[in-house]
Amino acid sequence: MTERLADLTRVPLVSRRKRGAMRDAGFNGSAPYVAADTGIDTLSGFLPSNRAADAEILPGRDRITARARDLGRNNGWAAGAISKEVDGVIGANFRPLLKPDWRALGLSSDWAQEFKEQVEARWRLHADDPRRYCDTTRSQTMPQLFGSAYRTYLIEGEALGLVNWRAARPFKTTLRLVDPDLLSNPYDAADEQSLRGGVEVTRDGVARAYHFRQGHQDSAWANVADAMTWKRIGREGANGRPQVIHFFDKARDGQTRGVSRLAPIIERLKMEDHYSRVELQAAVINAILAAFIKSPMGPEAMDEMFGDGDASAFLNYQEGRSEYYSGKGGVKLGGARIQTLYPNDEIGMVSTARPAAQFADFEAAVLRNIASGLGISYEQLASDWSKTNYSSARAAMIEIWRGWTARRVAFSQGFCQPYFMAWLEEQVLDGHIRLPGNAPDFHMYWPAYARAKWIGPGKGFVDPVKEAQAAAMRVALGLSTLEEEAAELTGTDYADNMEQIGREITAMPDGMLHPAQESFAKLLGPAAGGPAQVSED
Image 1 (cartoon, rainbow, N blue to C red):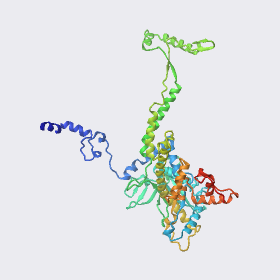
Image 2: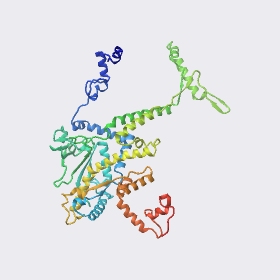
Image 3: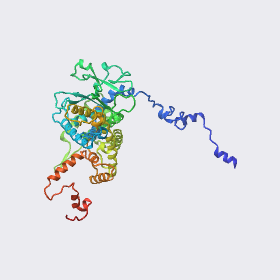
């Protein structure tokens, strides 16, 4: 019995050769972490190096940018995803909702409300002017400028702008968007410790100045002298006024330039584009060539005809077939033509199994990967809601909106807010907006005066009734405010809404109630959640 137990518990010996095979298969790695083992077949060729952030990005950045631009121009999925994100994050009327920190300033809330209304009115005059004075090039309004900047950030990885001063305009502060290609080291010099990718940095890693090429080196009309001339512009002026606005996602310490958001999915986008193009070409060819006629002229028949070196037999045969198919073949029966074939010819049909059976599944799998890389759902990227119910659509919207909200906050704080602060400085110093006598120094408390929340498009509704009821419950429980709900769901300013509703109530004829009034909901009875009967006053 003891010997039997020993046999059952004995560990079998493994030869050295077999041990090596097991190690290669990943059962017994040579490193504490399998992820660091170089002896495993699946990871043996996967040996990336650790480099500094700029050493990873800058050498290949131009090629990544060129490929991302090409996909944005020519790939429908990429172009659609870019447009959807720009429309969802920035939209048509991206604007600040001023929230001055009156507590930090030691002023009253009444002053804050008056200051807010005055600044926002002045901003609307500046941003929405159809003469487009806010743009240095006078081609876009301010929301359009922000949309273009965000599109550039999405495709190229960064947005660049210059805060200019044009004394002849109604508002002297203007914004000029700059092509990131123009930001480069003078004379295309190699990167160094204090100058990388055209950005001049201090010992602390602070971007101190930017070097801009005065003309694009690859434009047909560019002056050679301009293309080889650089201008150095400091990040800020003497009093801290922004001069260059540079926004990008900083993933690592020491990073000075951004990389395209499309970089992780460029390969898959290109592969999907190529595969779908091949499938489309095959389908077109099948549609054009539906059938064909097979001739019996095989190798044996050809040898027999040309065996004596006389080609006349073959030529006579082809001539006879040509005459037959030119209209002599076939008979009529009751006025209907019955087509017959030349002797020994056969009809062949082209298979029309296009697109391939696996094409739809493959494309859906690739698009899911692309959508995940872009931070949106497959349904939104492909505009395919056929397999989506309310719960899944709601969950997808929440996830997408969380990501878009984070990007909106980051972009507004990194690109829009610096320009807004420069514009507000002009308004205060020129006397268009007056501060009270006991107000603290403007430049000392610049961020408190210019504090704002930027409003873009609303989240929208999957089920309008459920969304409105949920918003009312959040406000009732103190989890949100009417201002927050108006901005999130519809992208509007609650104060403007209430002001307009007040005017509408005043304009209502006698005896007619406005829908916003509580008594109107009661009159609707159970349909609006009110009592079935309402007593008259």
